[in-house]
Image 1: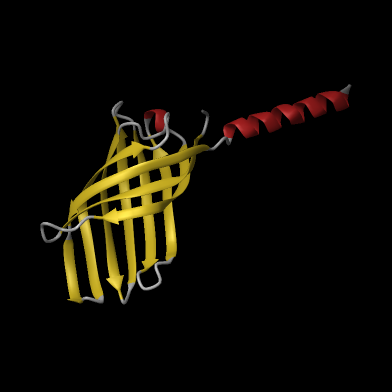
Image 2 (image 1 turned 180 degrees about the horizontal axis):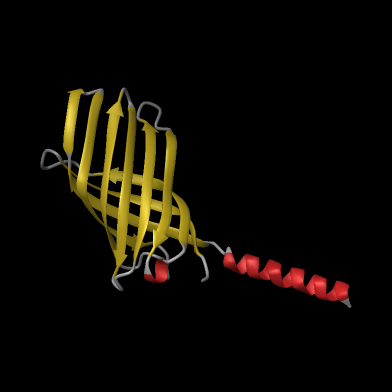
Length: 167
């Protein structure tokens, strides 16, 4: 009898662990615009930053996480001898007023086209996003031609997975 109770307990613990750690797919388009500050030595040595990047995120999944959300980000980047790097920290909000924090780190070799680093992380949230954790990557990226110097507009497609503890 004790062995049967022990086995049933293990099954219940295993089932609860599976449910608690259930990851959900994440796929959204992240379109943004920002005014930049730029420091340039020449075409091979450029650094830039932004303090007010504004973005909107649209889910690519029917019941996706980002049905209606927008973000404000700060970040910086550089283009040094063919290596392009960008780091962003963003606070997202949805139409319910719930928020979460996301970071982006991408390093790309412009000569070969290879990603040297490509990480998107979901860290924390409020409301329905309390307990959120996630990992993703940028799978496509477009920057649009600049009409105004020191201003950029673009879109990234981000895909990965997330979980919300206790959901």
